[in-house]
Structure formats: structure tokens, C-alpha cells
Image 1 (cartoon, helix red, strand yellow):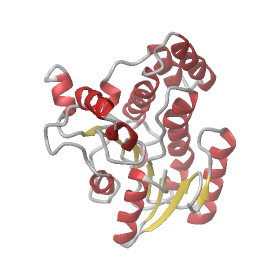
Image 2 (tube, rainbow, N blue to C red):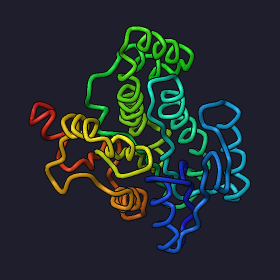
Image 3 (spheres, one colour):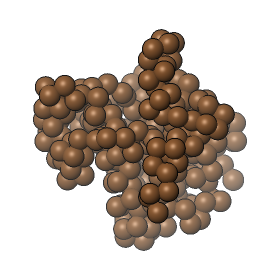
Image 4 (cartoon, one colour):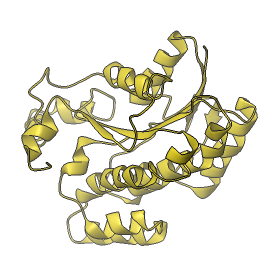
Length: 258
């Protein structure tokens, strides 16, 4: 049965691949991005987040079957935590009432295997406390210390921990909405191309994210997993951070997580 799905970051990368897959499956897709989408919204800002919710309600008729939060950025500044954590959380929380009104609702956010890399506790703690300005201040402090590289991993760790916390609450599990994250390894997108095209940077990437199974992945491969996790077939998978990383997490953390 056709479903109504909203995908953020729908103009490129994993978001575009996911939107394309869902459309091919016969579903109605409402895309959101900075441009070239049904909804134009800047998820780094409060008014952009409000615009997303408002337009989604209008375009969906007040009911959604799936929300897939793919919008993300990767740099050392505050924009990363604003989009990757606060923008994603605002998307999922803001659209949760529309999901609750739909049939077989499902929700997903794109995390990253980088979430298991070193993080800045001040950024993560502020993000999980919902204090955006404190998180931004922590990012700026990290940059000043020469540790701006921790911003991306911190933003992805925070949103992954948020999923773990919220998925089992009355608002999500209690209303029948599975909430999960997918944590990709290195995906061949416009965001990663400049790194992989530089031999020195490519070596660093492959050292930090070793992917022994089939190497780097394509957005379409992540889309297939996202599509299943947000389908009616997924009845019991919730609160999970599903690593789709060619084995990187197993290499980096071994069996210590158990």
C-alpha cells in the first residue's frame, strides 16, 4: 500500500537515494532540503525547523507514515551540531504528531560510524540536554583548542544516544512508532568525494574507518536499509543504531561492547 514519507536532505546523497527508492516503490515522498525540494528549509535555524513542520502538515494532510532525517553536514564549526543533532531532533519531534496520526508509522535518522570515534563530552552533554547555545559554545571552545575535528563525531554520537533514549518512551514506542538510526561508514557522496580524491586524505579516511567488507558504499545501499527500517515489515526493531559500515565498528571496537 502506498505510504507518505518525508525525507530531509532529499536533494543529494543518502537523502536523494532514499527518496528515489521510495518513489520507485510507489510511495509519495515529500522531500526537504535547502533547495530543489518540495520543502525548502534551513534546519540549522529555528524558523527553518518550524517551516518544515508547517509545510509537512500542509503537504501531507496531517498524516505521515515515515520520516527519514538524512540532512547533515560535516565541518568543524557550529553548523554541524545545529544540523546533525538539533535539526534532526527538531525534525523527528516536530513531525511525531503527524506520524502518530498515520498508519504503521516509522522514523529514522542517519547517524555515522564516526559516533564511536573520540568525542567532546561538553558538546555531547549539551546536545543531549537540549541546550543548543551551550553546544555551540562547546564547539567553538573545541575549535579554539585545536579539536574542531571532534565536532562531527560528537554531533553523531549525540543524536544516536538521543535515539536510544527516546525510542523506548511513551511518545515513541508507547504510540507504536519504531525509532532507529543507521550508522553508515564511508559513503560515496559529494561530501566525501574531495577527501577520497586526495591520496593522503583517502589513506587517513581508510585508517579511521576500515571497511573490510566490500569497501566504501553507495547511497543506494544505505537507502535500501532505511527503506526497510521505515516499512510496515519492521514491527520490533527500535532504539537501534544499525551500523552499515562494512565491518568498521567491529574492527574499531571489537567485542568490547558486549
